[in-house]
Amino acid sequence: MHFEETEAAAATSEAGAPGWRFAVAAGILGWILDAFDFFVVVFLISELMGKFHVGKAAIVWSMTLTLAMRPIGALFFGALADRFGRKKPLIACVLYFSTVTVLSGLAPTYWIFLAMRLLYGLGMGGYWGIGASYAMESAPRHRRGVLSGLMQGGYPFGYLMAAIGMQTIAPAFGWQTMFFVGVGVTLVIVALAAVAPESAAWRMHRTPSLGNIFGTLFQHLGVFGYLLLLMAAITCLSHGTQDLYPDFLKTLPWMNGATVLGMKATLGIPVIYNVGAIIGAVAVGAMSERIGRRYAVMAALGVCLLAMPMWAFGGSVLAIVVGSYLMQSGVQGAFGVIPAHLNELAPDAIRGLFPGFVYQLGVLFASPVLPLQNLLRSRFGYPWALCSFETLVIVSLLLIFWFGPEKRGRSFVTGHLMGTADNLPTNATSSATAALR
Image 1 (cartoon, rainbow, N blue to C red):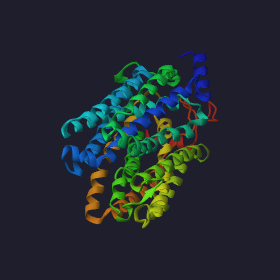
Image 2: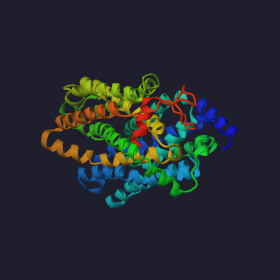
Image 3: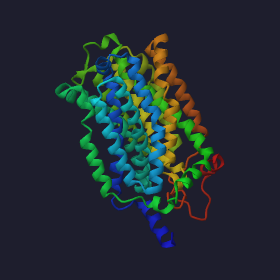
Image 4: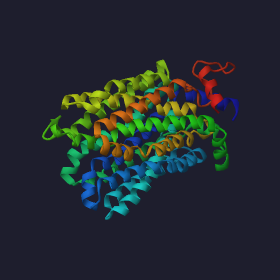
């Protein structure tokens, strides 16, 4: 690329591409829809058990296998994004997983349903990497932290919409409708991506073949291994505090007949704690622009530890509401930094594949968390199962982030950190990243 083109691309990276809001909106909306389509199953465990005449373990395993398929989708769609650009693979991915979601709602048997959820996992895994790289590359550098929080906040927002839909759409039109309502959002995402500009950073660093893409991946196994450990642990935190929590609430005898916000408490409480999750993701993402990615995550993890007693052992509706609100504020606050953090640490030539693949492979390594928690529940009861497991996870994450690197504010065009001249070395954290590579 000529010097003038490099300068123009660098300016775009600093100020954001014209129309960057369309790219960011497509990334955020797609992750909201992805989460909605996943958490529909969480809220429909009893209904699916009744329809397919299977036990709870069978439905839990369908969720586990969905998570386990995500790395394959990330690898496939991420490689396409690095070879052919961000826009077309993103559109193909959202159309694919939306179609499979509709087919999940139409499944006549458990085995067909399970097959659809496996296929859905491919699209769920593919979308995050493309959407996150597209959004972070298109957005202004100084807004990455808050936009990272907004994107990752899309996940609890999808969870929130699923909880509200169970109170509004499902009673009026039948619970199967929950698998169909996302089609309209899909069309909006396609329209946004169609008018958004292609990533200037991708055009700058595009690789000539799929072989080069995978070769570059193998050249950066050090940082990949560190981020894989990070993502496995933080996924245990996220899914371990979310996926079975609605079922845990149903086991509390004093929840029977209780209401929150005019809804059954078992559905109203998830609404409240997902509001906290969204606020936490945006707030901690913005905080990371000031104090750094690592310290912002560690502060959020401290909130999780403070919330643990009420979250797991709260003896009243109020205690559970406060504990779960604070817990998800901390959990998604920590996760809100991840889109920016992973993209800043990723090699330039494979930013479409690298963050999404390490993210989803971490999900695969963490996929046994639900059966493990279910096993601990059967032996020690829900409160101790949740508390002991998540405390261990949080302590592990504090150590991982304390000793880990970061490249806050790195240019996706020149590779330099915000405020550093082209002929000056970057700070110590980028040196640590180089050592990991």
